[in-house]
Image (cartoon, rainbow, N blue to C red; front, side, top):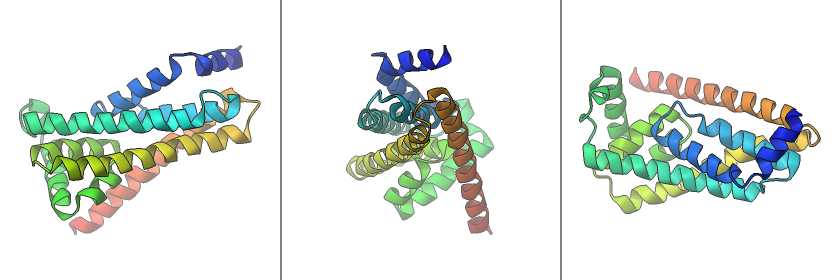
Amino acid sequence: MTTDLLTSVATSPWALPALFALVLADAVLVVIPGEVAVTATGALAAATGTPPLLAVIAVAALAAFCGDALCYGVGRFAGVDRWRWMRHPRIQAAFTWAGGRLTRGTATVVFTARFIPFARLAVNLTAGATLVPAGRYFTAVAVAASVWAVYQAVVGAAIGSLLPGSPVVAVIISIVVAVALGLVIDAAAARLSGRRAR
């Protein structure tokens, strides 16, 4: 029954629009599991043959680009201290960190931050607030969003292709792997930041 449910979700005309909405929301509300959604949909694509993997990648990349661009626009319009949550010391520290990194290399920090949810939000808001040139910023975001979408979807597809007759197991394992990879990336980024701060 669960397999039938997953197959019907995968073949639904709402599968890709739902993926787009989750990834777009993840760019602004970092508690939304955009990475997990892309990885799970990639697993479904490989395990059931639908939706097509290339469509998953294209939709995820477009949604990630739009979400990051939206944050850039909010930063340009509102800055990084307009709302109370932005003035929290830890949030301000993240904005300061992002500003420092952006002055050293926009492409590098945008690309790196795309894989780290809270850093991604800070970098995109700060890029808008500090008036990083839109052409340079959008080029970096387009490349980062595309690489991120390929990475997340292919991780899921690799798991789904190993379990073609078990979409439920493939989705569950892909979610566990996506969360584990996210935790490893977060820990590595925190450790690297700690070393640089010394």
